[in-house]
Amino acid sequence: MKAFLLLVLLSLGSLGSCLAQQLAVKPLDQLIAAINSNSLELLQPYLTENTRIGTLPAVYTPQVLAKLLPQFGPVEGVRLVRQEKEGVNTRYVCAMTRKGNEKEYDFLVTPEGKFLELNLAQASVKKVGTSFSPQDLTLPPSLDVPVRLVKGLILVEAEVDGRRGTFILDSGAPALMLNQREFSAPANAQSMATADTPKGVNGTVNNLSFCNVKQFNWMGISFHDKEVVTLDLAAIEKQLDNTPLLGLIGYNLLSQYALTLDYHAARVLLRRPEATPVAAAPLLTLPFKLRGHLPVVEVTVDGQPYQLAVDCGAQTNLLDAQFAPAFAKKLRKRTKETLRGGDNTPRTVVSGQIPEMRLGGSLAFHHQQTVFSDISHLNQKPGQANVQGIAGYPLLSQYRTTIDYVNSQLLVSNW
View (cartoon, one colour):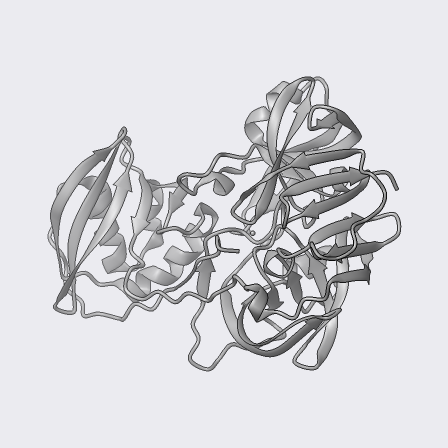
C-alpha cells in the first residue's frame, strides 16, 4: 500500500509473574489484568474497530494483540506517570515494571473509556527498507510487457533467484512483496506487521516477514542482494481460481516510470522520462498528488467531488460506507456482498453500478461498479489529506490510462 511502509518486529521477552497494583483508571486496570492473565477476552470490551497498536492499521489489532499479550506479560508493577488531554481524548503515560525493569508506555483513551491507541510494541523495532533509489535498480528506458487479466487483476511474469513465476502488478502495494509460502525468512527472523494495507479493496494480509533476495528480474527491471517483504497470498490465490503466485510488484519498482495500463491489448507499458514519449495526444491530462505511494485524483458524481486513490490492484471501485445513503436511489444492480479485510473478519457491504463518474470534472466514465465499505484504515496517518475511496479496475479499464509517477500526472487516452 514506498516511504510509507514501516515494518515493526515485535520481540518482547517473557517475564516473571506477579500481579501489578491498580491505577483506578478502568481501561488501564483492565489492560493490566488482560496482560497478566493472557486474556484478550478481558480487553475486548475496551477496544473499538479503530483501536491501533502504535502506527499499525486498526485491522491488525486483534491478531497482533493475540500474539503480543503472552509475550508482554506479566506486569509486576505499574504507576501513572502523567495524563494529558488530546482533544476530547486522554493520553495516559504509564511506567510498567517487567522482570525488574521499568519502561514507559502510552495509551490514548476516549471519553467512553475505549482505547484508541495501545502503544505496547516499543521494545524492538526492525525496519526493512522498501524504497529503492535509481542506484539500487537496473532500469531500462522503456518496457512493453504482455499481461494476463484475471478478474480485473493484472498478472505478469518475473524471476526471483532463478525461479520464474506469476506476480500481480499492483500499484496499490507499497513495494515488491513475495509469497511467504514460496520464500522462507532467515532463520532468526520473526513475524512483523505493516503500517499500511498492501491491497486496495479486499485483499487479505496476514503475518509478514522478510527474505533475502539475491537477484530479481522483471523484463529488465532488476536488483541484487536486497531484503524483501513476504506475506501470505493464499487468500488472493484462491480469488484467482487457485493461481499460484510468487508475489506482488508494487510502487517501489514503478516509481521511476510512466505506467500505461492497456487492458484492451492485454499489455502494460513503462517509459522513463528520457524515453521517447507516446505520440497520441491524451483526452485528459490531470495532475495528481501522491498520498504516500498512492496518486489521488478528483472524481465527481452529479457534481459532488470525491478524492480517490488510484490503484490498479483494486478489482472494483470503492467509496467509503458513509456515502452509501447518498447513492441509495441512483445505484444500479444494487447487491450486498461479503468481503474479508486484513483482519480476516467478514463484512457485509453494499455494491452496485454508479451510472456515471467524471474524472477531473469533464471526462465521463459509465457503469462504474463500486463497493461501499469502511476505509478509515486508509486515513489514519496524521498530516495527510483524507481520501474518500479508491479508483480501481472499472475506471482504469474504460480508457487507456497512464500513471506518470515522475511528472505526477494521470493521462487518459482512447484505445
